[in-house]
Amino acid sequence: MTKKESDFEQMVREHKSTVYTVCYMFSKDTDEVNDLFQEVLINLWKGFDGFRGESKVDTWIWRIALNTCISDDRKKKRRGEHVPLEMAADLYTDTDEDTKQIRQLYARINKLGIMDRALVLLWLENLSYEEIGAIAGISAKNVSVKLVRIKQQLMKMSDNQEC
Image (cartoon, rainbow, N blue to C red):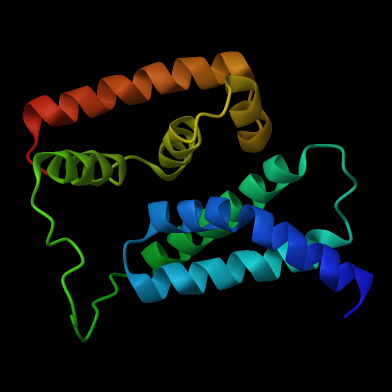
């Protein structure tokens, strides 16, 4: 194994939960999440030599993962609805109140636009507004304003829509 391969493998090992979190936010289908995960890894590998360290590694990974998932989401919309042929297992059988609330929150978040969904994901990961701004390519102040508006949207959904 070359040094580059070893370094890449170490980076993936350290940040795989970040990549998986982003992929999961854009799809709940296990196969699709795995496909997105692989696509993100491919894009990380393609850009690995070009990473110059001008930002933190995790900021770079967030940006690659989000851009990959956003691009895939746009492609899906152009292709049309994907209907799974088989439903082998119900992954959402847990019925306690906390689980219901979490599912309801994610259902509402998934109704947001792509960039709003990405901002919420980063915020839920407890990243600072500065870090979110660096990943999204906007100012920290703009992140703050957008998150306030997104929270208002989510609250309106809870008052007006059943998820």
